[in-house]
Amino acid sequence: MATPQSTGSQDDLGEGKKLEQITFRFCSECSNMLYPKEDDDAHKLQFTCRTCQYTEEAASTCVFRNVLNNSAGETAGVTQDVGSDPTLPRSNKTCPRCNHEEAVFFQSQERSAETGMVSRQFRYRGASFLDLGLELAQS
Image (cartoon, rainbow, N blue to C red; front, top):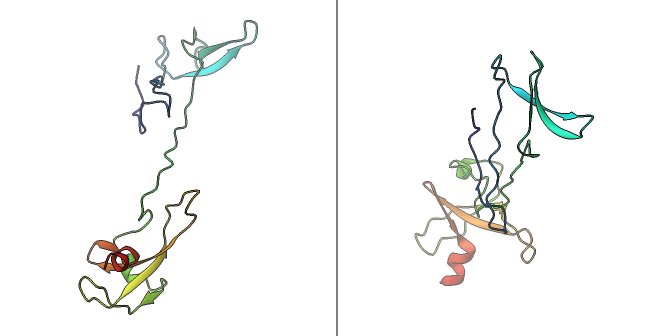
């Protein structure tokens, strides 16, 4: 049996349980894929071949799982060339760290119930971003 690659964590969110591995099943007679189907009489889940009608009982009732990752970084959606985007607003405010005089503004994708959406000013320098709000507050 082939097994799909897992893209998320194997821990059940918050409960510490291991998530059950979902596998593809293949027909032992013709090697085609088996598809989930309900046995109408017994009301049980089965896997059935659409080619030769081979049927086997399902070991688990889980046939699909959609695991979402809800975390976003402070610069989520920001690409390396964001500094050259002509549609973003700019400022000539001098950076206290390097005296660079061009800053790019954009909305941070990271938000929480306490902060809401925050507009941040970042200075584009090579491939790095510095939060000028934090830089100015620290100086």
